[in-house]
Image (tube, rainbow, N blue to C red; front, side, top):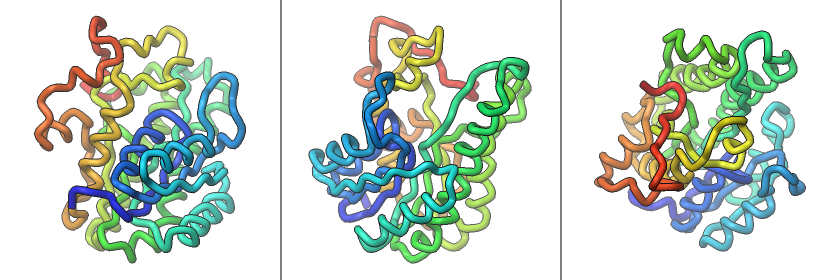
Length: 272
């Protein structure tokens, strides 16, 4: 399978950034895309809402469905999944993209921020999978793809920001567990992580980070597309890196993804 034509994707946090890029790439194939995110009205700091994302999906050739959904709220997630099934007849793919970030040490991490990261990242990934799995198990080539790094117990990734690393690795460990449980039932459960920084609006809000040292979200979207068009059978429990996925698909030149080719690329967190 080389296309997502006619497939239905449920993507969390897809109003902007990597989630939106994945949505638009799927839409170019003619996919149905449920945009599940909190951004219902424009934010002066962060452009993009569920409505502009759904319009972008339609413009790219897909069918977009805007769903206001806070993935911390179980009722909202189940309602969004039900609305997706009502609109498109099922769900073929879940992309767990929504994530909260706070790159500070323990004494500079308010518990409210700590709780937000655990609820959105690890718990939200688990909840969305739980809500989508009854439909995925009935799909022809079901995938769960989570934007999470390879699991690591190296203290260098935990020491600077224990709260964020715990939340992000939580997504990785949820992937590991669900792959073991549902991989044998034919659901491809995998994770994808970028080799370099990805220049998103959220990244640009982190002090001292320059998106010019990163790549455009399109590289993650193209890698996700390569993963999601693979046969799900026997393809589970992998912690994939965007560059490696694209190399395997025959891409050799990544220069077009660079935001500013004159600047060095910075590696993303959690990758050696």
